[in-house]
Image (tube, rainbow, N blue to C red; front, side, top):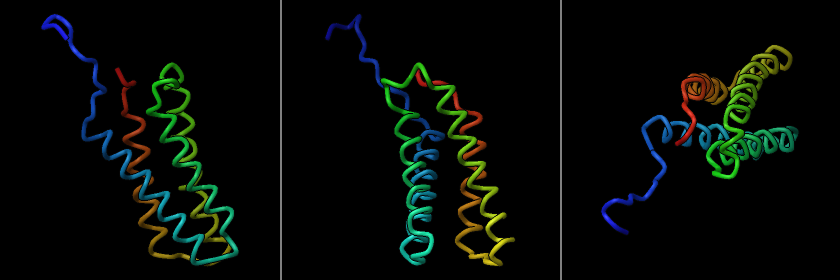
Length: 120
């Protein structure tokens, strides 16, 4: 490569790392709940896979032109999961501590996704 050409590398900043870590953590919490409670295995496993799928789409170069749409769906998906924790808690009377940890992670994830700029 000559000195006039520069390699285009994706910019990885702290917010990107946080989004990846928070998404994987939320998915892992949902999988752990699915393993512990067989009644919710399918629901929570699918939720975890949804998180991971949206994370991949968010950073997939081929989906870059759909960034705003994917980010919006990701925010909505996370917000829905956040709200459903409270709906589930009121319906079932179950309030696991790990659930509160997960909704805290999800709240931070929503803020970071809302502030996220399209990748260059």
